[in-house]
Image (cartoon, rainbow, N blue to C red; front, side, top):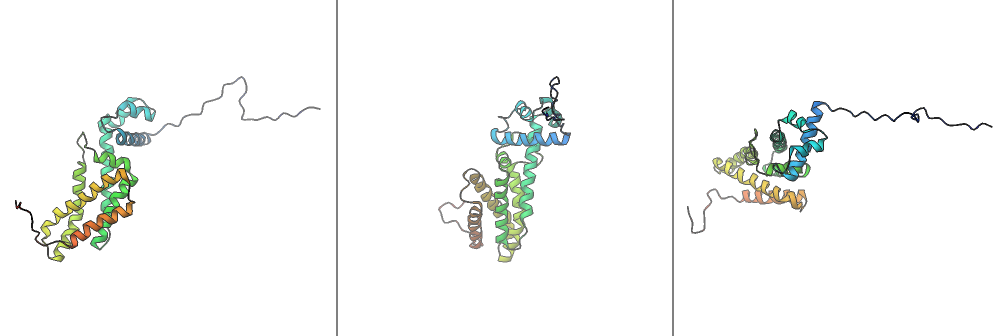
Length: 225
């Protein structure tokens, strides 16, 4: 009786070496995106000075000239990462301001910043550091100022309807947005209380502070100038 032998047509003959799987080559756009993501992660963890082109290239599995080819060096990569994050944050905040009631607008602005911190933590860590190189979109402080400009229009209309001087709206807008931004930097690390509770407390302070505004506030201490 002859035993039947199972054969596998896909098996490699004993006298032949197994073929290596061909590695898919990235397109230029895909490689650029990969380098941006790796750079973003490293810059967030180590900062600009602590990150090297060698490390970026090694993480991407490429040689240093590839990084230079796409971005001209570490500075170019960093600049693109920062510009993209700043635009993302500004778009999230300005895009969130859709409500009609001023208090809900405050809530939307607070949530937008906290959403960005939660979803794009690496990006926010990069933004709050002092950039060692000039950015086309400016600094984090200028970004906060841009967001405050959006709030300024809302406050100006509210001030006018309440009989307050609308010329003071820019000052209050900077104060409100600065308050949310600084609280966001603190919440970035502690993550307590929960996001919705942080937003509620921020709006509580902002709204009830605005609600009790004096048209012409007075200083009560001895210093008057």
